Length: 410
Image 1: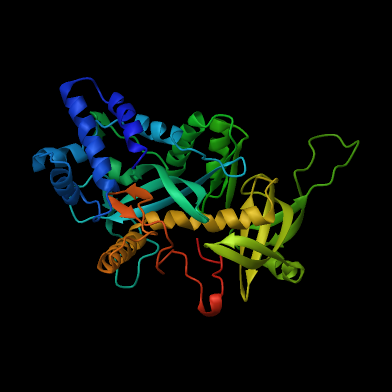
Image 2: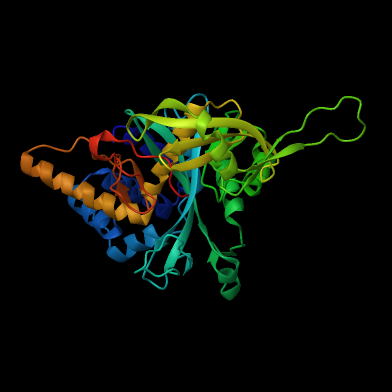
């Protein structure tokens, strides 16, 4: 809240100099202040009530709802201003960017970007094709007060080709053109790269994005400073590095001998795994891991693969940044799960947990020190601590302080 006055004048300058533009700028600042006040969930109706109660500004309900759904807000310039205002965005000299897609279920038939979307994480009592928005999100991974957190930086609505062919959707009188999730992710990360020029960018994502469909166009836009860290599929085939043969004509071989699948190498390397003490899930944990430099055809380059073992489970992590250590690879990928709190299944539990903590502390005469607003998107506020167990969320430590494993499905 202390940095908001310094940014308020910069925010106001981004809006047009017309009367309507300056009014939207003032309402934007009031909305930010209402969101940052830790009273209740930041839904539109609650924000309008908080602006009138706390700041004494009366806005007609129809006009405020129109403002919240306006396409005339300069989001791109606002994002870039906020990115530059981050004090220390780098971690070990890199910009750690988390990338993920999610769905946000809706009930209104006129909500923007809603479509029938496939939900691979739907439970047995839920529809596999809900009426929802599909959102591609990028966030900044940063260690804050000894705990990893993900600060949402930008997002884009994904619309299927079939949805755009059935009806014409216009934004500012221009028809939307189909873009794949890879193209949207490259565009979002490209905007970050223009703000953080000459800074190495490490994109931490799941196995769906972790292939050449993202890396090749990203490097074509950003250059070789773009690197990738993701989970590797168990059936991916790994190859050894081709030995150099001096005096042989023609193009040298790129791939060497076939080493086997990821699962086969996991069984072979388990006996060679070493213990590593890492900062995982808010504490120091010990994990068993093994590594190897290999060639991967899905990325068409040399990569470092790290196998993480726990009991009978294991996962394989792959990165194109060969300078990363085993500790950094495991820790960065474990921090990627912080972006999952931005998804609806975790948001409902996070809001409930936040409200319960606020009520308990009010009865005790104090204020919760761990419940702070750290990220805002889709009209809700999320706490900075670890969420309760949910689909796709980090699990808390078991009895006796046993550490949770990074072995989760992506």
